[in-house]
Image (cartoon, rainbow, N blue to C red; front, top):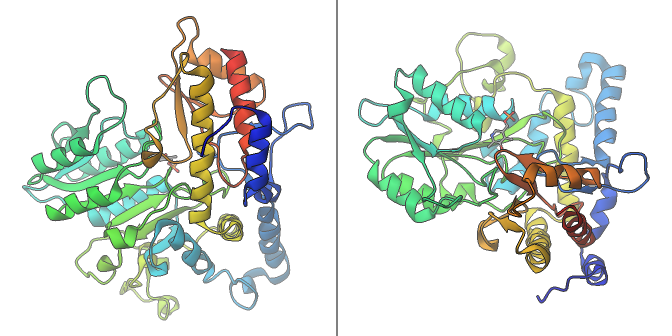
Length: 424
Ligand SMILES: *Cc1c(COP(=O)(O)O)cnc(C)c1O
């Protein structure tokens, strides 16, 4: 499509947008002291609240008021199997079978629990491949697991670095590094979408390469879940984990998701840190000491989950379902982000660099570096925030903006670029 840089054109795209009505299903924050909507481009960090959320939370609070402990059983959406109500829609987001996903714990906790099962270093194969600049929590998690197994992180962590002068990793370099270290690698842990650059990783190619060399592969999907389409089952990914408060709009610190491929479900040799909620449902309440894992991703659960948080996830999943699912979101997202990219290049090509790779390798997010000589990126960021934009700043030098397909409009993109232009 040939884009135009004017508000009328943006509004026309909004009128043609089959998802434009979804904005009304969300609470949009207002600019301080006004009744005017913010330009909220921060759904990659904390997604906005769906209107269904308070209703679903209230349902659970009412249930607790009226039924007490009986809320576990005789009612609509009983708490005992509540996590099961999330499985089907969560699975669609990542391209999995319902039995392969479960919502539990938090993201970093899940990475640890999954590494207990899937990082199994031997004398020869004990290294982990991650990015040089992975999200710090992922780095800490891998580093501490490596140490826990008695290895020296300086030796046992293979760090992927971009080429000199580049910010994104090239697939060829990732595959070459896998080849080079094939005999030593026990695990590859990479993001689906990189948090700083917004780069989408070729999870299928990486998984193929890993499996060719008998290396376990797991993905952190914090910035991928609800953002791009995936086929974790078909690709044969071993495990994955994601948070639900970014593109999945389930509220600050909400419970995380995880994926375990079905090929691992009945493997009795896998070590795991167990808890009663992972135990076979038919005998869980016999209160015996013989642990029998559920033969699905649910077998990795530890505790009975926080229902209020799961209710918020259910509200979000139902909102996404109402919108037509992830492929519908992705279609709009591609167009919306392409439009924002066009506007930035059309008007500000000399003043900003977009470090996010082109469409095929990006999701909603664009990461913008300010390259104007007399302006520091952080000062520009402060100025656009003061003018009614919510986006985020990531050290050392990036403004991340994520127009999301559920509640952002093409007009938001014009207004954002107007404000950025003025700030520059
Ligand atoms: C957001 C994010 C996290 C956050 O971890 P929590 O355990 O949810 O606090 C971790 N890793 C990546 C890559 C992220 O983007």
